[in-house]
Amino acid sequence: MSQRHTLQELAALAIVTSAPARTKVDRNFGLPTGLYLATVGLYLAFIGVMASVFMNPELAIPMVIFAGFVLIAFGLAGYWTRMKPDNDTAPLSWGQFASEGIDTLSGRLTATEAAVQVLMLPVLILGWALAVAVIVAFT
Image 1 (cartoon, helix red, strand yellow):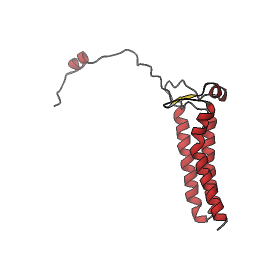
Image 2: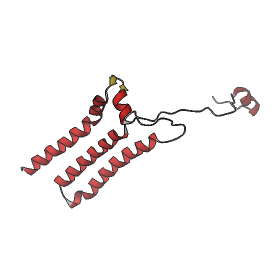
Image 3: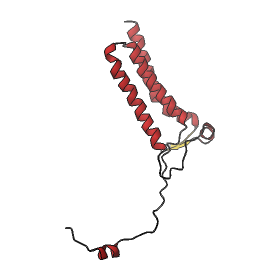
Image 4: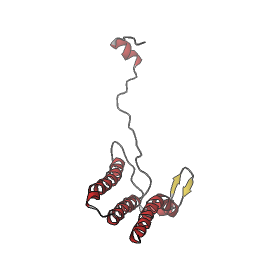
């Protein structure tokens, strides 16, 4: 049940600090920005291939919406990494990424292994779109 407390009782129970605690937030994904741009480019290339293969004026608006979703999703994530307060981390440079690699839950990955993991799905999706394009071209 709830109980009513006076201000004096609350003051006795409360712990008051004079300055707010500084919170350090790590919003960095730990990969260079170029990998994210490559991912966005591959997804947009998939949408472009699908739009060109099934060229139809009725599909123009859905394709623009799909491309907008991709741009908004990655743009929001990019904006989130630069938010404040106290976000002191920055994305790795290509040199740091190449020399240090990255830690994952399955262990340390070199830069090449991490890039392959990040870009595998978008490359497969684009490959699927190109396969569909070839099938449509021969039918």
